[in-house]
Image (cartoon, rainbow, N blue to C red; front, side, top):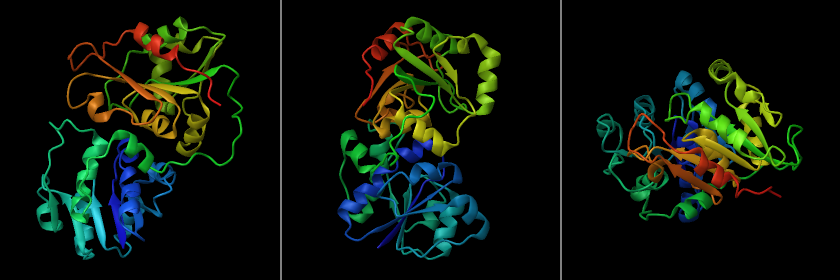
Length: 317
């Protein structure tokens, strides 16, 4: 049986969808898993040992040609993908009933609501497996294992890494999440021992420009390295895996760090559905803090709480 998982949106969403491949591998003997995603997330998908082949939607959207498959699961509703799958007569086309275009492009609709559910996003994704006879609510620990993430085969220390506890500060989110103030990240740098911690401030080149404009002094510490705009996604994943920890709001790099198994701390609002209960990291060394108020415009998490968590981090072997 050949199954396409369709998730053409962002990094964090894709990371939290990877467990579907592992679950199907365990429950459907001989299944071949395609993952249809954007070119931006290809490096993420290829880290899962349970995905047999990546399908690049950026290319397929031009040729409008899908490989032969027995089933497609529309985890992220995409009207063009749904129309193409129907046109190609994929036998089983699974989608949520909450998208009108699925009513005529899918032949198996699953009805569940994400907005008010107490379940995590990764758990909600598994609801779409019910038409395949897989109807179980998995724990986050189980889903972390089912992601099938495998680290870089070559174990070598990156030239930027030090003998200290190497921590990535990913301060921006491209507007996809509520961000912690830059001043608070600066307070973290100043509040932890310089001889114990080395900080790497990450982000895109554009985000680096914004950070330098808003708070240039954040880069001034002798234990701070600016790595904004320095990596491709694939090389950034390698770097994350070799670091000891990562601090960020609800962003893709947080979920990469989480699923790769390093120490990470996510900063979240307490308001639903943006809270950690829905979008928190699922890795074995992951933790999170939520804002003290339900103000949707302020991520009021004290630096003392964050410092308290980072002080428990250790050098990874």
